[in-house]
Length: 384
Image 1 (tube, rainbow, N blue to C red):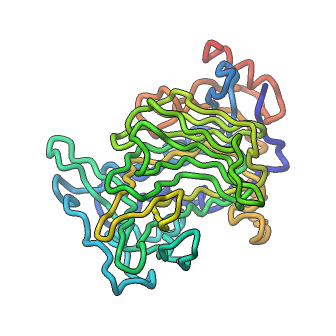
Image 2 (tube, rainbow, N blue to C red):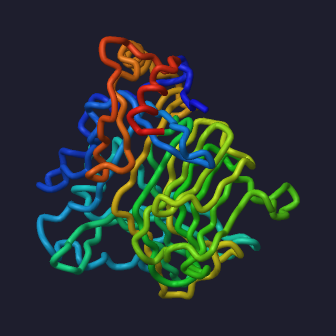
């Protein structure tokens, strides 16, 4: 089945059109944080139970954290852990030339909210900007860098790390990352869409689990009485180890959620598929509860990410449904409608990760989203 949004529901986020993506850092190599999709007007990929059926998306974003260093060993030492007195989430972010630059801040928000301890979640948790930083591979022959989110246990609280993407109007998305999780037991690494507690689709890695187990969930996972909802979550085992570098992926469509690891589908669900425009949240946390486990004082764990990729459609303003109406985005949308889907690009099986490749052009015509001619062109070119 063709999965295309109605034209009237797409709002083009202004900030993502008028500026280069994360390319103006002072570090000479931060231009690697890029969006290599200037020649594309739509994107095609295959997903789901019937992987021969193409899915089409309007927009593409790629954040590449692998080449942020000027040379080997620049980010080889992790910053010190948050200490017992730093319990207000007011600490400065490390590597501010990257993680507090104008280019970073237009796409991402580093969180500092906290929550109190309760009987069910006995450890007070505080998100700190000091738990978000850049690290580097210690092999000088391959000194790639990566974004790190950290959590650590203090005597009186758990220090955690969370970032939110400012694209809050995702309305169906294929979202991917190359990542690993390392460190002590009692922590949760999360990569998920979020609108509210009943519109959320998760990848969660629990360091209490065996390294071949990952949790895939559509919320809510418990009912009003606190009982687990069996169909909400899956936890397949015998997966590639999450403490090694793997490619993780959620495909959120209208009626289905699919989860992948290294391009292999490992879970699927039709229960509580998100229904509202959503954002992407990434976090590393613990609160001493039954789900996260209880981390020992002095221990820490890290969520390390080489790159993040989004292929998506939108609904409503980029700030999300509660933040007004973006008239200038509508103006840009009208230009996108005129162009239609003239240049079709693929995001999988490309020569370079993060660089979509043209697979077809609708020459001499303005192809709108509603025309099935796009399906025929792309299906022929992809051999499906």
